[in-house]
Length: 410
Image (tube, rainbow, N blue to C red; front, top):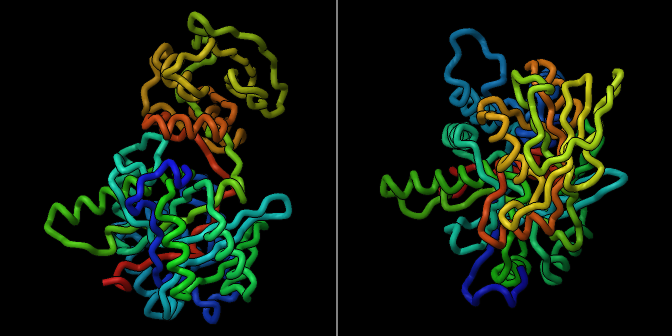
């Protein structure tokens, strides 16, 4: 992903835009109205945020899960009306001047900083933005319905790249000023925001980024939605417009390395005793949990199965060149052997969530070891796709700090 690896034509570009943001004059604590990305929240977290603040952004991002009065509109239409009302009331306001936004967030142990802009969409074969996971069509459709109703990007996708000195220097200079936003979210993480509006600085960043590639760290479904929205407008004869762009946060992985976590699986309606180890797999450990949480694999090449009572560890066979990661082995070998269909698989970011779902559905939790960044890059650069929901980069940004309304660009 260096300049030498890229062609001379323009490639990666984040365009300046005028952000839609919560108005601090109307919202006393902006940290309270933010939320994590939609796909890492369980129902309990969502209910807690809905109860904690009437303006939490989750009301716009996940309208299907908001309790509305009987006879209310379609949830996406209701959320779009709510968005319009918040804008009319001045709860959400658009910045007067377009720019790129420096976004720093983290906690006492891990701090990251990147730049938010309107990502120019390219065809996949241009290899400007590298996906590495498949997507679930129903989730893409859900994100598309939300964006079409809202006519806004409410959630940036998360991209990582190898970085460059010019952009890093511009970000460092911006952070010398007072931030536009400086808040602490309900989870204890801090979030700070600055804007870059100086034309010469924006041009410096444009030139520095144009020879780069970026890897999708979080947001494959939203990126697929961006592409689908653009195709939809092209199909009805629309020319260039806001649908040619998608909101994105770009982080220099060499300066602010994100951590890769595993996304575990649960399999509904299956007994642990009915899952044999296929030829080549070795069952190396079985233990009773006695009320304690199961532990994820301690090394790559192992998978842990649990029903909440017993924990079993499988050692994987030597990987083939076509299966680089543990999650690929799981989906290529184990799940087909067990005749597990997609509709019985759940995806979870924590062990407690995995175990809860497995027990609730009379099934089994499948705990995985995190994939490495090098493995992900090997898959992406080869033009291949890992199974959906294979990686979890973190820490993740909060939603609701920076948004992009389409009508501000028409």
